[in-house]
Length: 366
Image (cartoon, rainbow, N blue to C red; front, side):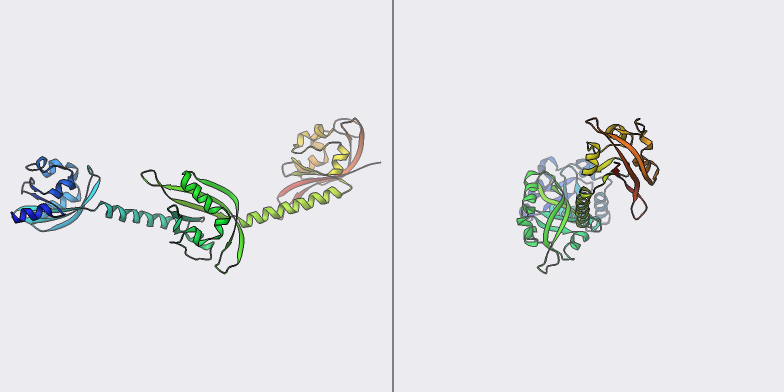
């Protein structure tokens, strides 16, 4: 009686199996663990009640304990309960006494940690800055190699984004993270400026990033964190700004020239017509292809006939990479007046000898 009272009040689930695998005893904790009344188990075969365990390591361990009359400890997954149980099988006079505990949370935690470590290993050397934050406070859980490189190798795992990069608050990045966490919708931004202390020295530097903030969902649909993916595009932005400055300087210079200038891209579409060229033609139309030069700008031969598109000086530079000098043609303006011009055309190549543009320079003949 004392033993039975003890078994009824222990926190372990205790079951006793006979030599033919039938339940002889089931305590109160076992009822709760298996979610079965003991009356539904007593006298029944273990393998009939749990056929999904046949052919698994659990069957092998139990048969070993019964056959060798030796104690065996193992863990088993119960599909019907979607739970993991720790089992110690103790032989007792040809029978088996099973001491069981629910270890689902521990097993899941171990597996989730293994998954996280696996993901970390995969993402560590991906050539994109990747950071994982957790919770509404955006605490940094993981940074890969490229993410750490942006802050001179400093490891900020465990800190919040706000404490790690206080500059991000006033620049609106924390608000963006809050928005993603609360709205459950991803954010994608390009050429986003961030002024921050990269090396911890107190010196601020400006950098530009293409950013993606992707919410991380749990199995119950909750957002538990955010996956940050960033590409440092500072050099690209600087080159873009430099090209824009060069273009602005070029346009300003071309506007002051006394000659008319028309520039095309490598494929021949007109990208620029300076003021002098627009005055000579009486019109300035961009994005015109080679075969439409004559019709769009009313270009004529010296005899007054429509100029064959493929024979125009600019067309020859585009189509055949020719350098054409001192060619002459006539222009009929929209108001009906005509002017005769002389001009030269040539392709423009970069340092790798790739054609990047074509240029036509013209002046009126008086």
